[in-house]
Amino acid sequence: MGALKPWHIFVLVAVLILLFGAKRLPDAARSLGRSLRIIKAETKSLSEDDKDLAEKADAQSGRQPLPGDSTVHPTSVHQPGYQPPAPPVNDPVQRVRDN
Image 1 (tube, helix red, strand yellow):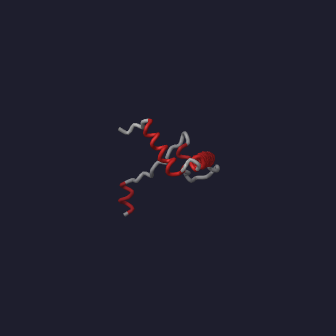
Image 2 (tube, helix red, strand yellow; image 1 turned 45 degrees about the horizontal axis):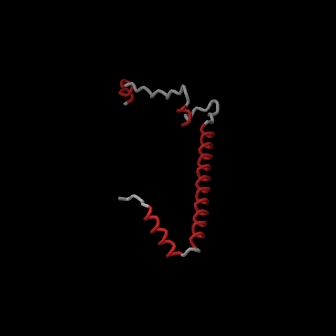
Image 3 (spheres, one colour; image 1 turned 90 degrees about the vertical axis):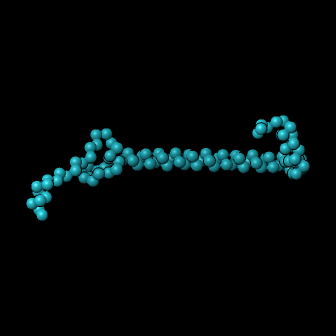
């Protein structure tokens, strides 16, 4: 079940000819082909735009912070040799004295 047999195709073509007429079918097929070409070109240009945006994002993430800049940038976390700052040490004796 579900297999397309040759007589199915013949019946489909006969119904299409009866519905649309023999003169309109080539025009319909031609316009369908043009539409598919347009859709293909648009999807290709969209994928190229996505690649361009990804390249721009990669170029921006390659920027280095200025020398002497003490803030931690999100891009510096991914650089080799990065070590996060050590958390401050809380001395319990000092905390009791402060209170």
